[in-house]
Image 1: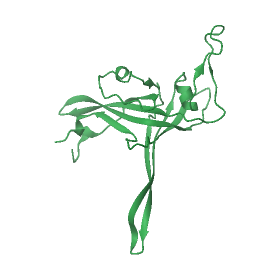
Image 2: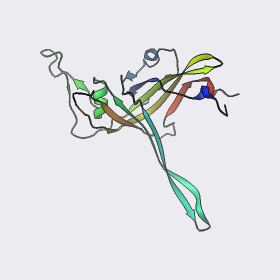
Image 3: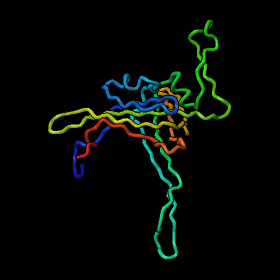
Image 4: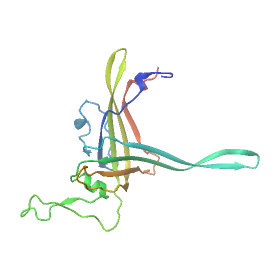
Length: 204
C-alpha cells in the first residue's frame, strides 16, 4: 500500500538461523512452531549475539560513456554480492564446522573416552556449499488487532566466505562470527528468496 502506514514497519524482534544441504527448499508452511516448520533437513544454529544479522546486497555497476553526453548513457551490471553476517554463540557439532569451513566432528576413541570429541581443521580450503535460512517474527497492528507476521529469507546455495577472529577472554562469551555469501546455481534460478506471512503484500 502506498503512503504512510505504520503497520508496515518491521522490527526483527526475535529470529533464528538455519543451515542445510545445498538446494534444500525453504519451508512455506507457517504453523507457529519454527521447529516443526524447519524440521525437514534444516539444523538450527542456535543463539546469536543481540546484533542479529546484517544483510548486505552490493551491485557493481560500470558506466558506459559516450562522446555525445557528459553523463553515462548506459550501465552494465558486472557483479552482485549478497551476504549475511552474524555471530554464533553456541559451540557444537553443527556450528564449529560451519565456522571453520566444513568437515565433521568425530570420536577418536568412542569406547575408551565416550565424552571426548575431535574436530580437525583442514590444511587447505575446500568448497563447503550449503543452504541458509533466516526467520524473524514481528507483530502487525491494524485497527487495534495485533497479528504476528513472519519473514523467511532463503539462500539455496552459498558458503562462509569470511570468519571473524575468535576472542577467548574471561569477561566475554566466545563468538563464531561469519559472513555467508550467496552463490549462483548457474541455471537462472533465484539467488535468494523472501517468503512472508504478511498481509501487507496483498494486492488491492
